[in-house]
Image (cartoon, rainbow over all chains, first blue to last red; front, side, top):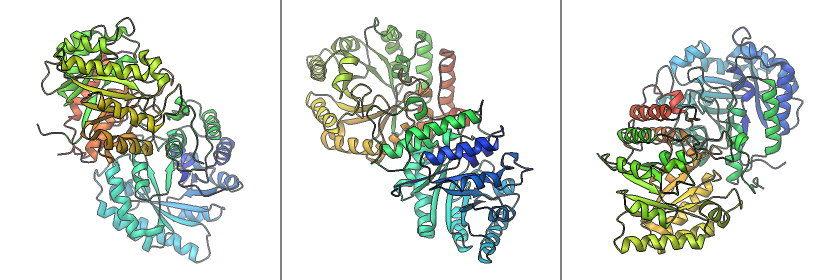
Amino acid sequence: MSDPDILISEVGPRDGLQNTKIFMPTEAKKRWISALAAAGLREIEVCSFVNPKLIAQFSDADEVVAHAVTLPNVAVVALVPNFKGAERAAKTAARKISLPISASEAHSVSNVRKTIDEQVAELSRIVELRRAGGATFEINGGISTAFGCTIQGEVKQADVLRLVERVVAAGADSVSIADTVGYANPKQVREVFAAARRIAGAKLDAAHFHNTRGLGLANCLAAIEVGVRSLDSSMAGLGGCPYAPGASGNVITEDLVFMLESMGLKTGIDFAKLLDARRVLEDALPGAEFHGHLAKAGLPKGFKEAA
Amino acid sequence: MSDPDILISEVGPRDGLQNTKIFMPTEAKKRWISALAAAGLREIEVCSFVNPKLIAQFSDADEVVAHAVTLPNVAVVALVPNFKGAERAAKTAARKISLPISASEAHSVSNVRKTIDEQVAELSRIVELRRAGGATFEINGGISTAFGCTIQGEVKQADVLRLVERVVAAGADSVSIADTVGYANPKQVREVFAAARRIAGAKLDAAHFHNTRGLGLANCLAAIEVGVRSLDSSMAGLGGCPYAPGASGNVITEDLVFMLESMGLKTGIDFAKLLDARRVLEDALPGAEFHGHLAKAGLPKGFKEAA
């Protein structure tokens, strides 16, 4: 398999399910993740090592990771909200962990019950855990609410860039930047990612957008224009924001793959198998709301995937 | 009122209603168009002068135009499928007519029952009508299926560009380019509009995208990047394609305005009044399918429109 031009990191099993009230049975999660891998997704965020008392959806995180790591050609990612989560992840074979660090103080306290400073300290502890031989995973710092916050409103670019610098300084292998609440616009995306690249260099990793206001794909396009080569997305736009009823959640994987492939950018993903994986998901979450244009409209007549 | 950075041409009353089975009462059309104008839309395609036996929705075209032209600061546009439609439009005070000319021979015959050559001849007849004093409207040639066709599949860029040349040569005041079926991608959009600009210069007018595969806003962004300053869109993404059940139709006006204003590009449109206009539309078409993220999610906290 040749390297894709753009790496799509499927976050549905984590970001999507985190926002879904229905518990997806462990066996169904495994089937879905297997189907995603079979479609050609090479990086999948499969769970969160959050306290199961807070989010019951991820009470089976260990078992889900244990399954996912058996799949060929898939980098298995797990979200960890804190050091304790990283310790749990360290006991699994997850390839990478991602620690969310809010650029908004208000969101940080609300989301992980820690100030930004305290969360950066968690990152340092995780780096230290690995240095001391207690873990082998890659460490990603995921800067959340980087384009605005539903609590504090505007988030200053200077605050985001300072956090990029701190995450790199703390020893993260990579930094991703997330529009957690669907506030970003393409101009802002170009500015933030171009400036972050100057700070983080090759450590600048994925862009993570939500489609809450419909700008998900336009923001992905803007990110690609300034050199981003890894994009998070979620099958069927699963998730959604509890504060925006009816709005879709993450960028929709199927539509993103269509945009990229139609532009001649290889993703390594097979459309037919991707739609198979969507059916596995639909069967596993009866009654949930599924988004996506491509799944409804189908591929254009005579469409060719990027060679 | 200062000039907007981007002119949004609202095509819902034409392109949207053309694809809607429910007849919207004439008084409701007037109310909706008035509300659109009050929100700051400065160009509205209000109807089609198509044979009412073919599309009953536009049997009241004369009355709708007569109302729309009384609204201040609105350029009233009417679609005309052929010379006969232009003759009808000439008896009204419509500011501009738009004649669709397919870049796909198969679509041309299916859509207007004429070959491409015959449709270009219609354009010439309309130009001659005006030259002879029989009309005062501006004349736009709207190149449809410019990015692909549901009947013939691929449409070659060379065919589109030759048609741009012919439309200008025939004496049209402006040329717009449309992705009638939602096949376009941002790379293709940049290529086609940049090349068309080299041929048509300042006569290159609006980009018209459908959101059938979710790429509407990304395509608008790509068009802006290569200098397009007029974009067609439809309130609530009204319309949809009969061949793509559940897929939304045109680019959604509310979401487009949000993208542009959030990027600092002035549209001259007031969000609160735009959502008022959407409510007028919803009341006028009970049971129809309305799209749009912004209408569901609302504006971001602390959002500022472009000054």
